[in-house]
Structure formats: C-alpha cells, structure tokens
Image (cartoon, rainbow, N blue to C red; front, side, top):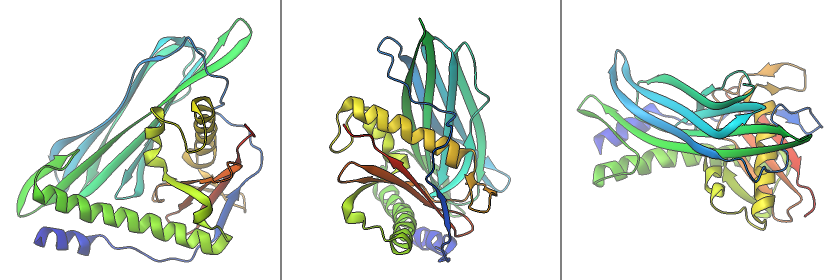
Length: 289
C-alpha cells in the first residue's frame, strides 16, 4: 500500500482553462474509406507491448506493430498511438507504401515511474482492381501495466495476478478515468454537450468493435463509421491538430480521445484535452442508414 500512495503522490491531475480547437469542415483525408473488399483480408495484424528491463533512469518497453495482408495493395499504412497513464506518449507510422503487403513498426520507450501503457493501432489497405477502389482495415491493441519501485523488483502484467497487481491496476485505472472524466466535464460545460445523449467510448477501447457492432448499427455500418473515424483521427490528430489561428499543435501530451456517438445516430464527436489545456473537438456526420 505504501507503493500505491507513492504512485498517487507522483501523478497529479492539473486543472487548466480550456480554449477551443475546432475542425468540423470538409477536409481531404489521407486515409479514405472505400467499400470493404470482400476478397482481401489480413493474414495477421498485431500490436504488442513488452517490458525489456531496467534502464539508466527507469525501465524500457518495446512497442511493436505489424500486419500482413493476403495480397499486395495499391496503398498500405499502419499507424499506432501509445498512451501512458491516459496521456499520449508517442505515435508511430511511416510513409505510405505502394504495392506492399507487409508492414512492421517498432520503437523502444523509456519510463521512470509505474504506469499503464495502452497502444491502439489502425491497419489500412487501399486496393485498386478492374477500375474499382476498395479498402480493408483492422484495429489492434495492447494494454500493459508496469510496476517500478525502489522497494520491489520491476514487474509487469497484462492481466493482474494476485492482490497487489489488482490494487495497482485499480489505482492507475482511477487516475486515467479521472483524467478522461475531467476532460469530458470541461468539454460539456464549454460546448453545451450533454453526455447523456451520447454513447461515450475511449479511442483505446474501439478495438472491441472488430468483433461486435456499435450500438444501434449493423456490421457494415460499424466498419464504415470506424473507417471514417480513423480518417479524421489521422488527418486532424495524428498529423497534428490545426488551431483556429492556423498553427499546428502536437497531440503528444493529450488525453485519450473520447468518442461520443449520438444516441440519434446522426453524428459523433471526438474530444481530447491537449497538453497546453486547450480542447480538441471534432465533429463527424454519420450518413443516414
């Protein structure tokens, strides 16, 4: 329990004034959702987080993202976002690949305190065949907890085993939930959004809709919404957030984006609090179905 209290002392929540960063207009997307290719599929797609061991000022984890399509695609791209205790630590991607089926990305990350690491990845392929353009996509993730303390061995887990793991997971999860709750409350108050009119899902949980459907939507509609969502995430978040003054803000340090899907199925919001305290709020229309 002393280790848990030490963690709480190390990680604090900062209350800052929100300003608006708003991108609701039509933009040319780099990821483009085309009708799903019924013949193309990923042989494999994976995101993994692995504790390597002690480092000079803490410890190191390895972050890997890979995918193999069952054919070469006109365009291939994988991107991944890594959040530490609910804040964006790093992002990885690469130049668009033409006539490629395989992608592999990896990076080593150093951290000095106990933390939860959440990685969420989007694997995308655009295919051109017989004058028709289609696409296929997949979302993968990983979730790792690392306990680092001067009075106990370095330890990591994906799922808690034993009482101490469960206590640490509870404390770290509360820190993350409080950060996201605060970001949501600020946005609600600033932009008059009532979260009771929305289904609220963290971006890092969107992988679950690979095997199920979004509330109120069928499988095909879910795939289309996810594809268009990642169009917006890539253009307006991953590559940098455009402020109203035309400047580009680095998303590193921002909270995990919350996806707010309207109960009337007409639109969704993407909200996040940036490192400087500003708010990112994106709106996407959901075509009638």
